[in-house]
Length: 415
Figure 1 (cartoon, rainbow, N blue to C red):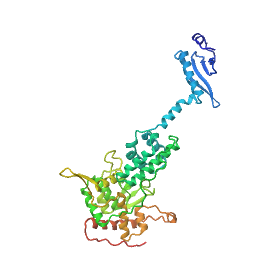
Figure 2: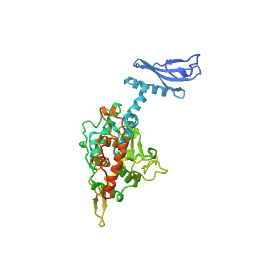
Figure 3: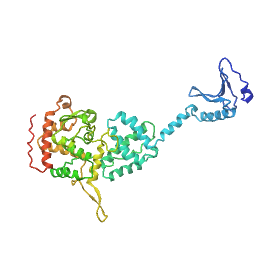
Figure 4: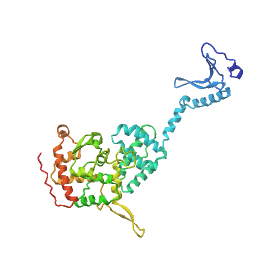
């Protein structure tokens, strides 16, 4: 029938609902009015797409007039004629909006849907993305980032004196864009053809006795927080990784032993570190404390970031000062050649080796992952040997920093 005001008003309710289809001409079809037993009359567009029947509600008469319903039908017919499913049009629009994510949105989605689910080191990804990527690209559309943008961002990190961090940032950025391509958020990755900004090199930096002495003493006069100062010292005393040291909590300390849970270690294996007198002196009073080195700017229920140590060391190795005449200059407040916090761990291991500590004991102190057959068959934890090694190293370290005659007894290879 042809829909007119009189014809539509005269349609009477029945015991069951029924449809009246409109004759639209021009090959158009599917425009219908459903009359329910209650007397309610509703407009519909009824069509088939990919062999499946769809019924799209267009509103109730008379709130939606014949003219309005006809216009909506024409619009949806045009969508169907273009090869799209009108009922899925909103989903298509949402998909397009999703594909137009900003970098800040993409970072959030990558962390939630990939990093936190599949990477034990996801917090490192979050830290680097929040520090080096979002401030530069955050408001830009992810699809607008090109290869040149990636190169410029990485060059900026290298130029600030952090080539290793530039490599780390690139690996995470590349993974994030690969994730976006895998999830059909982007068609291509801007990282294609981009190489690591800096060559990978195994670090060999070890502080000498003189450097250890100068470093330890100058820490007390540097522009650095007390927590960062003590954390750096504790890393040198214990030989543990920076991220493990800054996260130390009083619940991990029992008497003279510090137990690092598996989830906080790189090899994901729990370890015990003996706390010498020097270590306890550096840690200080733990009464009423949670984290020994809490985050200074945020919730005290979180530890400080290991990156804070990197920044503190880098800043004091090249510290900007202004003299009385207003001239700007750069001084080295730490008084030693360039090093990173992780080099303190290598320094402790090297001194222990020089004092005769066996390699397997040093590996036990450092909690290095065992490889090969020894990983399966040697389950000994070396607690006794670790204690002796750390005590020997503490005595040596004290003699260095206090510039006293060493009373260190060489470590005897008993096993």
